[in-house]
Image (cartoon, rainbow, N blue to C red; front, side, top):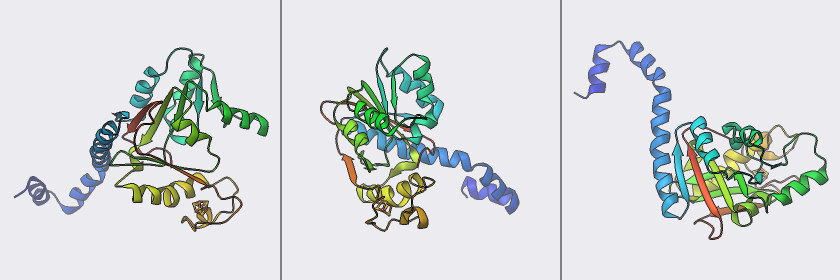
Length: 236
Ligand code: SF4
């Protein structure tokens, strides 16, 4: 008899399921860890520097070690990077941060910050999906993020929650439009079909945000690209 079956025989069904419920976090952590381990190895095979951090605090600690003193920082429109909390720490260290989500900016200032992303020393972003084969996929409307991810900054640091790991490229492209876009575009006052229904309709709306898709199959040759895979659900 397996140990699980023995346990089941010794406790009442309600106790068993209560314990399974209490174990849910551990089960999820193990699931994330196993998939992250496969993704990290595949990323390394594809030329990226990649590491796993069990949770956001650990990720923050490791990421901060990678930023040279005095480096200028660019940051894409990423919830994940904000959740990890690196930006306040970098601000405390005195780094110049180009953040187009900072409050009170004019349209001209936002545009100027997006341009500065292309020439900063270290660019921070997340991705919309990471495959178990080590491919990184991002969908975007404007293009400053995907440009900065491929050429310009000396170093690009991509932080990805394990919730974004998918089996393959097909699943990654599907995730961009079925999972990431409907959530990322929600709450912005847009009338897009994905926001209203939770599904992509490959719309022709003037508000359409899906205009550019980036697939990093291998590390861009002239950019030091580092991927932190975090064992938590982060971003959209
Ligand atoms: S193509 Fe249109 S409907 Fe589909 S995810 Fe993008 S913005 Fe939403």
